[in-house]
Amino acid sequence: MEISHFEGYKEDEAFVESMQTLSISPSLDSCPSSRKEKPNPEAEPGPPHKALFFVLACLPVFELLNMSEVCLSFRDAVNKDVLPWLDIMIDRPLSTRLSNEILWEITSKANCRLRTLVLRSCQNITDDGLQRVVEKNPFISKLHLPACTGLTPEGIIGAVKTLSQHPKNLKSLRINGIYNIKKEHIETLSSYLQRNPPHQKLPPILYHHYRSSPSSSTENGRIIDVDICPKCNEVKMVFDCPRETCRQMRDMLFEVCRGCNFCIPRCEECGGCVDAEELEDAACADILCSDCWLHLPKCNYCNKPYCKQHTDQQFSSPGCTGFICEACHVTAIANSSWSDDAVE
Image (cartoon, rainbow, N blue to C red; front, side):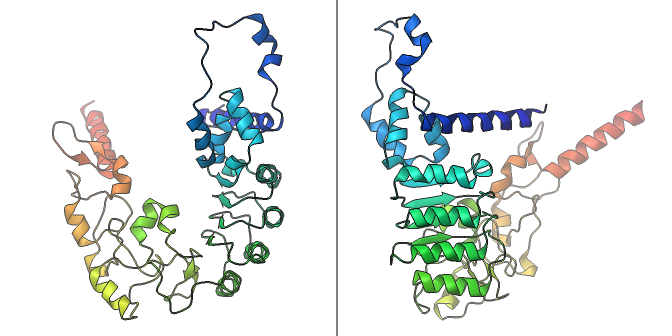
């Protein structure tokens, strides 16, 4: 069995055991092993600090389940207290294992008072599973479902329609990565959400900020993260340009370089729009503008830089400072092997 499969099996087993622990909380005194040996009072640890119980409400579900296995006090707090379950955030490694039934079991612990539901890349969640949760929890104010590809636009609309029966409750909807969302779907969602007025100036979303931190970069007052690209008229993430000249044109309502990443090439470092004549070669596959290209360290052989997100692909250069890019490293190894074969 491969190591990756073994690690995935262990994570699955730990997740199942954690969920079983939340449903059934046996007393530690009932364990036979605990009655055999009397612990030394001097060596016995004390109860957790009270401040740690406030941290539970800020943890994603995976960390929350791990904390429930630390001690009996944490187990009781996680299992019986509503506060840790009011804001539910599910990310990897649980996202690929989350089903409709497990989601229902988790959200039921909020006792119909769920405020935040963040599901990232939970492909197994369907429209029926989401609808069941929002009907039971009508006061959700933050609904984030990025890359939940098991959901459909109609399912999203149904959930938002249910939540919109309580006006001004839903303040944040994130649906980037869900397939087949069209312009008419966005218009329907906007009508339910009482979206920002058409002429209101919205805070910009900058490409390089979104790439480094997708969740925080969209928390800027927008109700919906996706928009209709003014270039291709498709529903995508639409970015603004941080360059001063482009911002001035945007203030004059000339949105020349506002659009999705497919219509407007953008620099990976600064997020600015990049024309074809200033497009520079990088050691990675990302786009760099001339200004950022000049300020980044270059490969000792090909003189190409890495963007900051791919600096982990650098190889140290023996005998000198700087680095070697991955392509030059592979070439150097191939040439060394060829030279050894020629000598033999």
